[in-house]
Length: 144
Ligand code: HEM
Image (cartoon, rainbow, N blue to C red; front, side, top):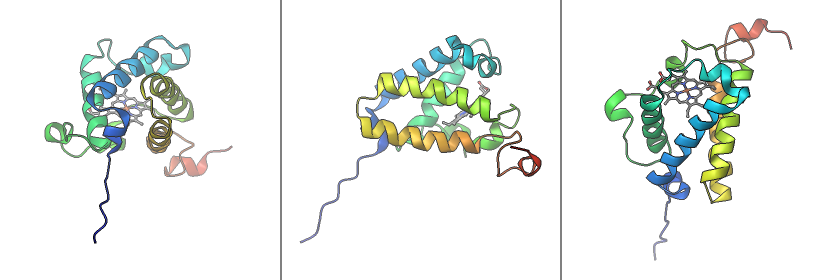
């Protein structure tokens, strides 16, 4: 007798499109208001509507939902797309602070919340392009 293995995507565990939508709205609401996030907020345009739409599509696809991002933009190449913005530890921490609060307010399933936060924290680490990122050549000369 064969075993039936049900795979539930992170997209479903989070709560689907309505939750992704609210998550991104609250994420940018925090970026707009938290003093710790002012530096990263200033990297963005005044009008966040297209950025919000892009992040919603990206997170939908990245969590295993419909492929809304790549049909329009192709391969994410996320690190490359962030190269124009100076991202070090402080910027990473500010980004994650906004995301932590938004996740706590939107995702009811605690295990899913911690899992996605952990994955996002890794991604945010990888996005750094200023001294301090061990993957970067610049990082090799950085002092602690
Ligand atoms: C670590 C700190 C980060 C900073 C300071 C940062 C900042 C930015 C900025 C300034 C933009 C441009 C916005 C625009 O053009 O409208 C952007 C785009 C974007 N960011 Fe980040 N970001 C960070 C981390 C992340 C992470 C961890 C993710 C993954 C979930 C992410 C996903 C995206 C996406 C999907 C876009 C749109 C890219 C595109 O044009 O297709 N970012 N980010």
